[in-house]
Length: 327
Ligand code: UT7
Image (cartoon, rainbow, N blue to C red; front, top):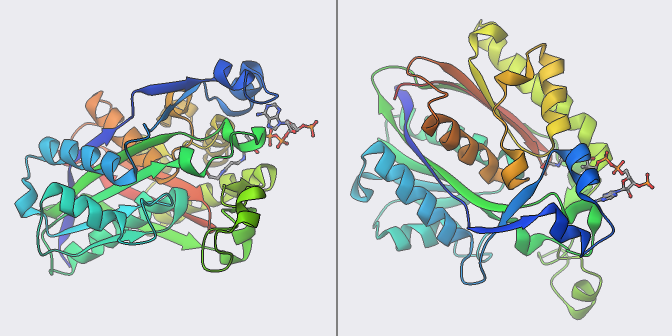
């Protein structure tokens, strides 16, 4: 099995900002509630003339530039999303066409907020197996299209954006390994009830707003902290490493209190966790690649550093990647 590394990262955030005071005019909420309960101050909203594939293309272009890899050298595209442009073709295929890349596999994965972590692990295995040299892992989420802006328990949390990484074969280990897991028995506590084959869109489902995302937030809160701690601890054990060996953790940005709970659970200072939730809210799978790109571009990750990603989301799904930065 060969080594695999991250050669470059990129991201795209729509320019339109929806801030907490905007919600005070839409639902019964307050800036104070949103900030103290979640840490979110504002989030970006995708314009009407763009969809997940368009944001994914921009993030991919930025990652290609950062890695100095040209589109014709990309051997596969994986896109993590729960807000695809359409049921099919896949958002990855739409991105492939928009990037003008021919004759490579392109496919979506559905692992909700853990999607980028799952995508990196799939890419690592495709490349380590020797069949492919270079791939694009993209996470693009237009969560505003799944958001019920009359439901205060969820609308204040979500935002839109996309992130990407170019992943390629390497002489030394980069993506060292991952821990990924799922438990489908909790599927109902975070889901979009209608619009799929179980309950196709109808006047009734639209009237009942069942095509929007529903979440049992309080039930998820505790599971999120437990599973994210478990993912990091299992990875560290597998690599016989200590938590102190990790220089920066890039967590999913669902709630600042969850991130601080994971820090406490792992016995690490909160400063070890990269946080940008105040600017973008919860962008599902896009949170981690956007945060990774920001942290790298800010110079917070240096060559040789060991970093970890960690996420939890609908499915339920959860996981972590352990990465040695080689750039
Ligand atoms: O992306 C991965 C999956 N998602 C997550 O991991 C999210 C996990 N859950 C959470 O982050 C938190 O549970 C939430 C942020 C969703 C909610 O925070 P909470 O502290 O668990 O609040 P709660 O649901 O227990 O609600 C407390 C109160 C309720 O009022 P009562 O019943 O105490 O009178 C809610 O109706 O806050 C009320 N509430 C709000 N009030 C003002 C709920 N949403 C709002 C709101 N503004 N936007």
